[in-house]
Length: 108
Image (cartoon, rainbow, N blue to C red; front, side, top):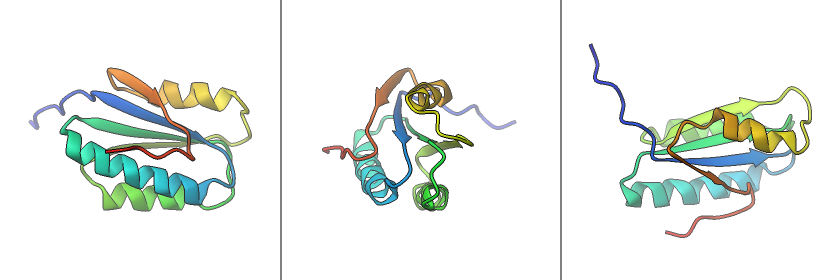
């Protein structure tokens, strides 16, 4: 039987609307760099608010390129407006939750 994974220390929770794919991609890359430097178990949670801009494919490619990060992706079937913030937090499993804008970047 495989050993259980260690618990997630930090969930970086990113609600994102339609039209932010490129900004989200840049944000995710800065998170990957910082998470790799920290040594903490980091989960990246993206809640896609019914975008039609290829965000799902971009997040899948990001997850594949960064296998040491736990990436959780969920997509709402219709615009949840501010409810998308609650969706992203509901999907998180970390001890700590950091709400992060899809147009933000993380400093090392």
